[in-house]
Length: 428
Image 1 (cartoon, rainbow, N blue to C red):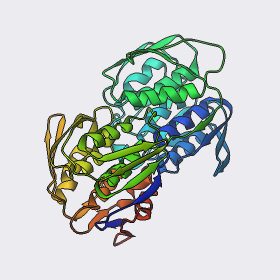
Image 2 (image 1 turned 90 degrees about the vertical axis):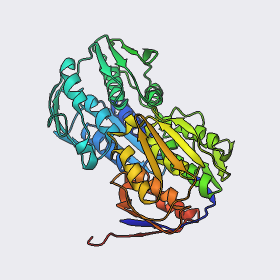
Image 3 (image 1 turned 90 degrees about the horizontal axis):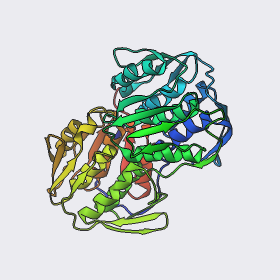
Image 4 (image 1 turned 30 degrees about the vertical axis):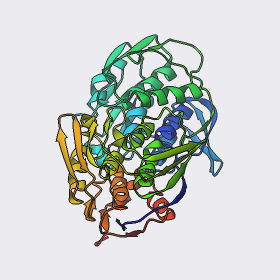
C-alpha cells in the first residue's frame, strides 16, 4: 500500500492508541496466573494479536473479547500445540521464549518478516544454563526448545535489549522452584524493566533487585502470579508521533497518555520542551501547538524507539540537533539509523552519523518525495508526520507497516484534517 500525504495543517483531539508494550506484558502475566484475568483497553495491533495467539498456544483460553475488554482464563503454561509464531514482535519472541520453556514439552518458536533477521544468540548462550535444550538456525529463528526451565544464578548482558530480561524475570517468578539471582551488566532501557516490574506487581508478584544490577528470586510452594483486572496504558511510542505532528502542524490534543507512566517513550515530552513547542497538560490530556522550534540535544539510549519521531521533529528545528544512542538501532525492524538517514535524505534532510550520535541539520525545510518504510512501522509514521509540513506531496511505499503497532494511524491523521490518500501498490 502507498500512503500519499499532502502538506496539511491539523487540529483536533485524539485518543492515544493502546500500548503494545503494556498489552503484551499483560497477556504474559495473565497466562502465568491461575484463574480468570481481564485486560481492559486491549490493543489491536499486529503485535498485540500475535501475543494473544501465543498465549492460546501455551494454554490460555480467551473466553470473552469485546468492547469491555478481554477475559483470559489460564492454569499456567500448558501448551496445546508443538509450535508457536510470534509474528514480527521482538518483545513477544524474547519474552515468551523463556515462558514457553516452563513446560517440559518440545516447542518450535517461529516468526515472520524482519524478526527472521534479528539475532537471538542470547537464548543459545543462556538457555542451557537453565536446563533448557535449544536448537536455532545459527542464532536466528526458528528456535526449538524444551524445558522445563530451572532458575539458576546467571549473569547476562543487558546492552542489546531489555526484552530478554523481561522474559527471564517473568519465567523465574512463575517457576519458583529454586532460589536464584540474575545479574545484569550494562542494562539499557531501564524504563521498560520498570514497566515489566509494574505489570508483574499488578498481577501479584514483587521482584527485589539491587539497582537493576541483581534481581533476586526465592523458591516457594504457592503460585506466583495471581489473576487481575488490568487496564492497558495509552501508548507513548505511538503518541509521540501525534505530539510531534501537533508541534509542527497543530494544534493537537492527545488524550490517554499518563504522565506517571513508566514507559520509556514518555521522554518525548522532554524533547518537545527543549525544542520550544508550546505544551500544556490537564489530567490525561496533552495540548500541543507549533512555535519557533530550535535545535536540541537528547539522549535516546534508554528510549531508542523515539529516534524516528525525534528526527521528524528535528527536521523543523532551526540548527543542528544531536541525538545520542544510535548503537541501539542496529537490530530494530530496520537498521533505523541508516534508514532514517536515507529516507529523510530523499526529502532533503541531511543527517550525519558520528559514533553513537546522530546529527540532524534542521530548519531548512523538507521536500515531498517517494520514500519507503523499509517494512518498519516507525519509519512509515515518521515520514508521514514530516510530510505534513513538506513542500509537495510525499508518497510512502509499504505504508501498511504501521499495522505492527498503530493500525489506525492514517485514519487518525485524517480525522485531524490531514490530507492522506491510500492506494494499493501497482502489481498487487
